[in-house]
Amino acid sequence: MPGTYHQNEYDLVGIATGIIERKNIVDGSSVKEGDLIMGIPSNGLHTNGYSLARKLIFDVLHLGIDDMLSDQKTVVGNALLAPHKNYSQMINILIEKGFTLKSLAHITGGGLIDNVPRVFPGGLAAQININSWPKIPIFQFLIENLDLKTSELYRTFNMGIGLTIIVSPSEKDRLVSMLGEKNCYEIGIMVTDSSKQVYLNEK
Image 1 (spheres, helix red, strand yellow):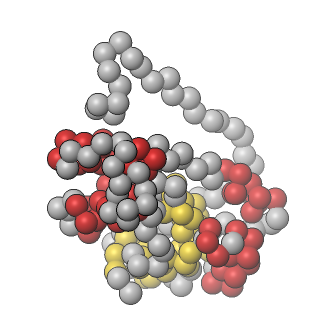
Image 2 (cartoon, one colour; image 1 turned 135 degrees about the vertical axis):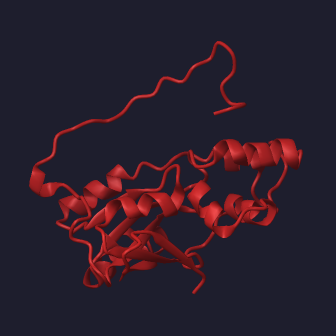
């Protein structure tokens, strides 16, 4: 990330690997029209567009780490250092309780627009209501200060959703009861469409 790592510094990255029974693989193949897209909130930027956000905050707007975002409650430094959630514990709990996960998408680089279509079959598209979950201050700040089209915002940043789970409508209430209303939002629905893409709407 430009401006984060400097000369003679490096980042050591690791990955988690494992083994899973073929029958337990969540590959999105069972997703169908009418299934619901549930969004799990993120804590902040995570890795999505982090360099762009830093450039806007520090180089364009000339804010410092102790300045407030537009909500006048959140300090810039705290917003940028919000820890990345570990969603695996949540997923493991659902699996242990026998919950049927049709599809999972971790909303990393590429945002909702590029990540969600990777986990549902052809002949479908996702309609996502961008007003269906509360925006945390850093994303409201970016909306107000970045001259980007809505589609680019949702391709560059996670915009407050760190994980999506696609479920049957009959499983929605059970999922919300297990995770809590503030930890799980219905953000969209699967529709028949040959485009295999995400459509953003505001209602």
